[in-house]
Length: 363
Ligand code: IPM
Ligand code: MG
Image 1 (tube, helix red, strand yellow):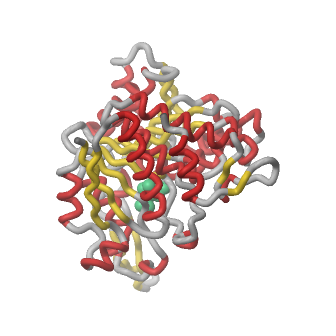
Image 2 (spheres, protein in one colour):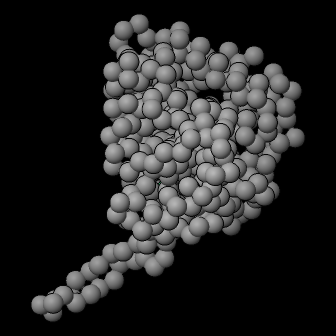
Image 3 (spheres, rainbow, N blue to C red):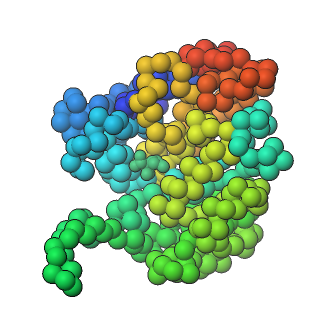
């Protein structure tokens, strides 16, 4: 029996989680696995229910589970709340509480969606990049931070906002190991992406990554500045195998890279700890409040996140593969949600319809 914490968030969360759980139930039948779901609120939903975005009980539910599945958090209606009550704070909080320092974001283009990519098919075809994003450090968590006041030379009092971009060498070392190990199972190339021409913290990131690379003689290490990487991802994304980067650069580059696949609605992610706390799985897209309740959101990112869960948390490789195959088959036969719909030879599907089509194909 595997216990899965299911964190209900905002916007389209309940629809995409419904789809993901239907898929898990089918996997459970076909592969004779038992899943038990423990639901808990997070984000705006938790704020509405109990007054905080990340209730202790939700954290406890996660800690007792074997894996965590998360929808998404955030809604404009919470935009005026104090920073510590905002839904996004819950996401950062749960990552920190579960010590999920390694975020894997695979960017793999399905041939069937080449027409939905904004890049030319010959550039997008066969792109297969793994972004390894550090997730519990950097300017996201660095202290000191805040908004205070200062005096200008002409004696005016003005506001000043600041965050601290900071990594220590232990934090860099452990994420670098994750990247090199991932590369060993792939094309054996790691590109360290940073801003070492300007930032001291990036100089250290490079230095420690270089040191760690000596333990992985079979993996080739290269370096790239983040601004150049943003450009290379659209010029020639095939040059990348594993991209190793910090929290904020990884956040930005993964949204950019996702569009290569045709839609943000296609990208899953896995967030991992050093093993003593459960891993968490979530689509990389947000809560899309404007789509909520319309049965039109693309559930594939969440369904593929479940596939990653089966692979990384439960070591169920064939179940994972069967989900990928089912998704590919559905796309091949021309079924599309709105975000990936193209007028030529495809059929527009609702969230529940495409989910059912995927489920039928899991065997
Ligand atoms: C992501 C999201 C989050 C992040 C937000 C919602 C806090 O953009 O998972 O990429 O910045 O990490
Ligand atoms: Mg993001």
